[in-house]
Image (cartoon, rainbow, N blue to C red; front, side):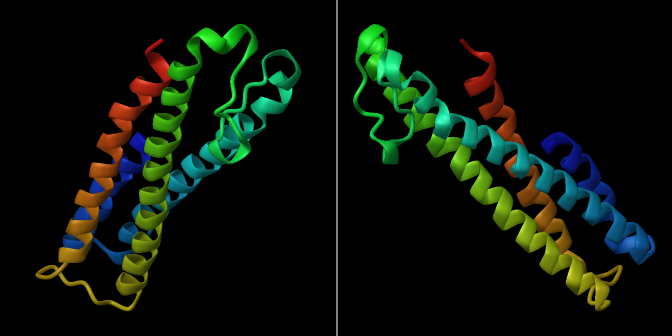
Length: 154
């Protein structure tokens, strides 16, 4: 979802300067939509991880989220308790910070869409659109590093 939202961002950035406002609105709406879909997927993923401890509670006493007492690990997973703790701390901290930046980005995008609707951008001045494009691509690049780190590397 993140690369898809970044793909729609350049067309929105360019259309703020030389193409009709309808193209600008459609491109930004697609960017908001893809970003929102990503956050919904993250919500379900976090939900599954928050409730994972309930499924394994009887077998290994594993709790994965700090607020739920995941510092206590025994049973068959005790030898790798420290690795599990470190992974989960990094996982929730980094992906949570990324999700927070996505939320901030969507809010900023809605503000820019409102400014565009009011006709505040001209071919000579569309700096907020360009600056937001840089922000959104930076968030995308961060995800490109986080995804393999947490999902592909064993």
